[in-house]
Length: 275
Image 1 (cartoon, rainbow, N blue to C red):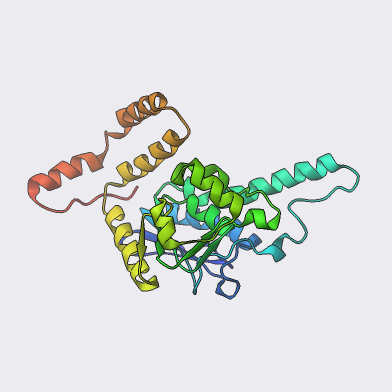
Image 2: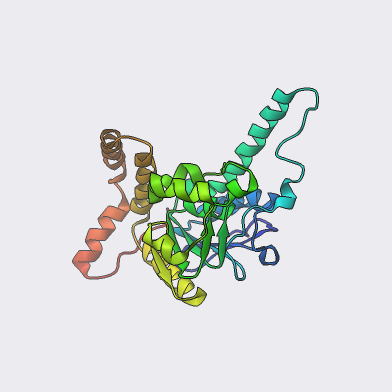
């Protein structure tokens, strides 16, 4: 195994079950997202992908998952300013924002499934981050909030694009327009998280159990399922059916497929090679 990249705002590691871990590691600032974290998230997911992680758990160090954007890191704005030309300033802003958006999308674009474990606060950019994950769990008393409108900002890191598909248009609009804080229990009721747990220890245990169950499954099928689900989100049912037909026409010819049936015949657990 190669060494993880040097990181300032994150911790990243891979366990023996090929479960990858990314921990937001700024507990002194409620794991608020600064410029380092934005650039380090893609580095962490690329390293775990290279090391054949089959699933990634995303957690926050300390009492909170993520308190949102570190406002101090945005004091000078996004992108360079051109006092002589407003259009060039706006163009630079869009370029800078694109970099930040790609950082937030790292959990979605990585090949393997990603699971967010939310405890304490998950505000603003924290919601951007968890909506880019495939699965979300939380403690019952977690606090979640689409906070941007209170800061005179339109959420621009993915929440407004992803949240409606998770909780529905009506709930997404209400949460985004009111900046209302909800509990983990309420988030579970609207489908934002799949389950709530009593405390952080139970959350960690449950998340790891789910991650290990996914990591034990055929990796080609798991990665393909994530890919097809993401494609389907942005396409019609007819397009999706056509796409998955083409996908399976090429991907069913895998050693995983043979191993599943061989293991069943021999009454043993299947063993899959690294992807």
